Length: 256
Ligand code: G3H
Figure 1 (cartoon, rainbow, N blue to C red):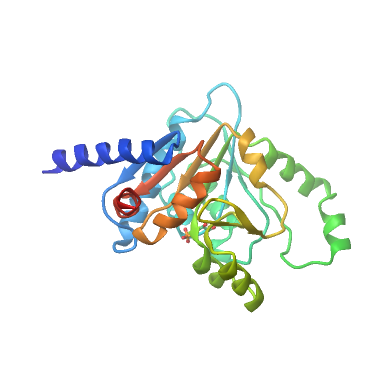
Figure 2: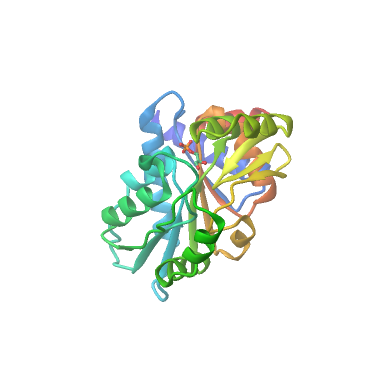
């Protein structure tokens, strides 16, 4: 029955929370590798959880990354019933994704569905060092970078390392390096091995991994059995997170 299934899922969430040592776990039924709608359900669960963490006393600045999972979070976003003020910002500059999957796109889509405010980071992926140094001094860009640093909530995805590097058209050298260093996970431009050690990072502006420690709520959304190893690796170095995942990933992690 549906009730029995839900009870099973909440037991599984408890077990996974314990195994990973994270702050909290939410699991939606199904496997997003097999069924597209499961990713939308994770999106819906992420939106619900995000709203639980909104503050009514201070302005909520929410930094978000890109990717298909985050695009699903944006697709399920809705206005806050309590009208708590929210501003969305992209967590980091360009990582080489196509327009649909960029943090800027996810950010503007999320804000429009939430009927709230947003700011974008207009920095091209490839500029000379001199241009780059000048650009980050531009008041409009500097302002957004400060907002990112002040974000109280970060929502980001996790990817499987090789899948992400290929999708972003990484060079043959980088692919080789990731292979040699046994990279298994990727999150906002950082690549990790199975112990959660950083093996590579894309140099770009915005949120850096160390900054996450200062963020009040970090919501990580990743599912599908193919991401089990990546999730496992990532939380080894960032355990203080709220994980939104699916049954496919959860079952695989618990078996391992
Ligand atoms: O940054 C991208 C995410 O880490 C994973 O992307 O949601 O499309 O699998 P995805």
